[in-house]
Image (cartoon, rainbow, N blue to C red; front, side, top):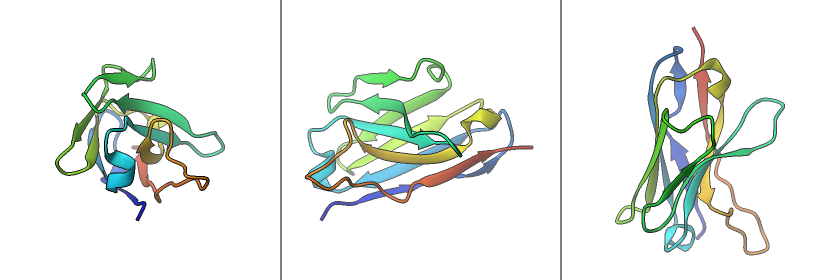
Length: 118
């Protein structure tokens, strides 16, 4: 069964922090790079950060230093620690493999909404 379940979003004030979690099924997680993506209202989904199966990381240019991606291979879980949040970080955050998993059908979870507002 292919599954992606994101959690940890919420409402936070500018400058605050959140930690997102995503549990993926073995089919997606095992031996694959994993990533966080986000989609802001009216915008296309974009890559936020990715982490390879060996732990190497890559961040979208403007986010490095504020966001940290990590993974627990024993739990099939990937995390995104977000610090110094800004209103422009408001979006629905999704996790998936990198590139996104497909077997002819594209799989995405429901995502988790992050709202940064005072």
